[in-house]
Image 1: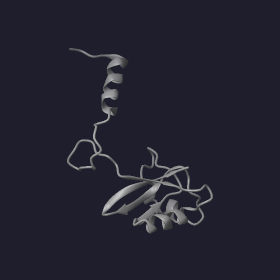
Image 2: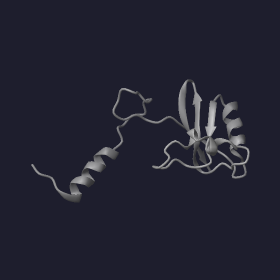
Image 3: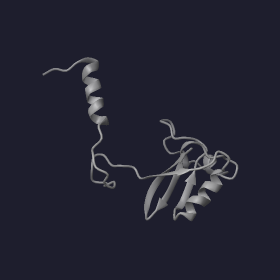
Length: 113
């Protein structure tokens, strides 16, 4: 059987994007795993340093927040010291802000408004 063109690609991408069901914790053995996240409401005037303090008060450690979002060119801006060095001067932004650790698990930090 020979498949050609856009319909085959669309079906393939749809299958890849289907949810795998369940709300189980991420397991490294699987092909796909869920990414641990924490969503937190933060006022627009708060700095990333204040967000880090708030997360630490909730039991998170190793909080690293970035001034930019991840991108295909830079998928881990939290690893770039020039993007994480001034949390007291960087306001939080809606969406992804960085990473933290809780109970030995790395979690992605998302800000909701």
